[in-house]
Length: 101
Ligand SMILES: [Zn+2]
Image (tube, rainbow, N blue to C red; front, side, top):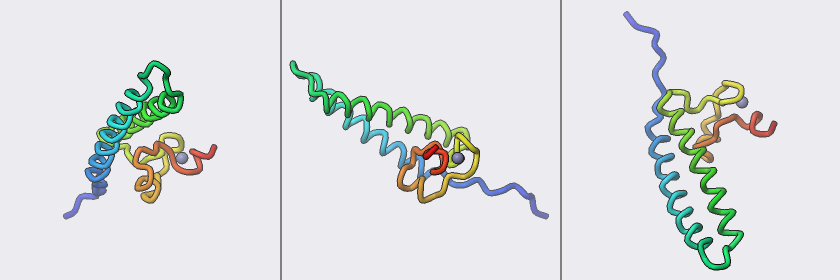
C-alpha cells in the first residue's frame, strides 16, 4: 500500500544559501553605510546601501516562502521557477517571463 503524497522538495540547501547571502548583504551594507557616513556622503555608497537593503528584503521574502512551502513557485503566475534561475538568483520571486513583463 502506498500513499500518493508527493515528496516535498528539499529546500534546506536553498535556505542555507539564502541565509549566507543575507549575511553577506548585511556585511556589505554596513561597509557601504560606514562609507556613506562621512562628512561628504558618497552618493555611490548611499545607492549601494539602499540597493543592498532591497536585496535583503527580497531574501527575507524568499526565506518566508521557504518556511511557507511556496519557495520556487512564481509569485506572479504560480508556475515553477526553473532550478537554474534559483541557482543563479536564489531570492528570485518570479519566473523569467514574469520578470520581463
Ligand atoms: Zn511567472
